[in-house]
Length: 357
Image 1 (cartoon, rainbow, N blue to C red):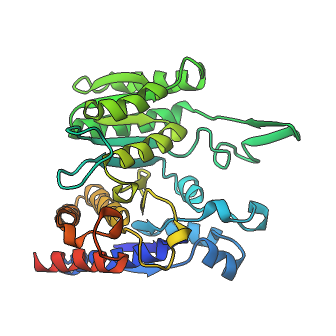
Image 2 (cartoon, rainbow, N blue to C red; image 1 turned 135 degrees about the vertical axis):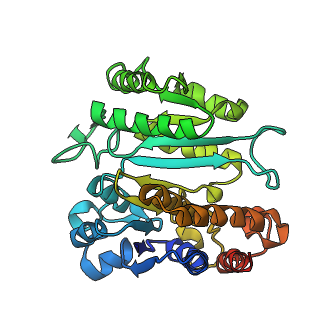
């Protein structure tokens, strides 16, 4: 089983370097048979090849069982005409990674940004291949235009096909959790696009009578995440809403640095930390690699389910519980969580605990 490793920009190489010893330890302990290949995306690729994402690399990625993708400094890339391709969008469209799955949960041993006594354990199921994002809603061209220097227009794309399949993934996940799906929308303003999204969600809901279904306005959802986070199980969202709500949920539950994330199609899966590239702390060994480690655990879990391999599923569970065990000890936390460990030392601590289990 082959895994493609792409460190990315900013703190990406550091958090990937801290994650790989953990994955290697599990690979050896459970004899998973994982083989790792590394390549370049982002600024390293731009300098060497003239583009942040090569077509050849994207095509080659189809032959891998899994992908580990570090953060990218996309906002700092040159325009696409000068090689600055959005790497995440390239993979999402190129490999049809339509399901961006982002869990957020509180931990009793870590502080949160919720009111005292409040807890959270939810998953945001975000459609990732269309919506308001101009780099992925056109067959040719760009989804934003400026008819004049004083006017800018953005085009939103919502399709029945993409809405139905992401809704089905949300209900399948909820059926394995606490049997509740909340569809997020703004249908009072976006009558047609959110109307179609909800129409698809309702149709899929009828296929899952054992899963409770509700609909909630995006603005009300932000308030309920703060005030009543325990009400949520799986949140079904279009691209833009899920991007915003997942950051809010993760920060409320403790920190964006604790939030795992995967992008998945029906045949491929890519682990990608939920946070950005944080160039302001690049090269200082200050990054918290937890999000990247937990994203890789989610990748292992997906691979285990997809290939019906219990060893991968077991390794994923060990990876997650070991991270929690390290975080539970104040002495082995990173500085952003009140500890003293650097990025590299935290990864080594998790890897050592895996080996000693």
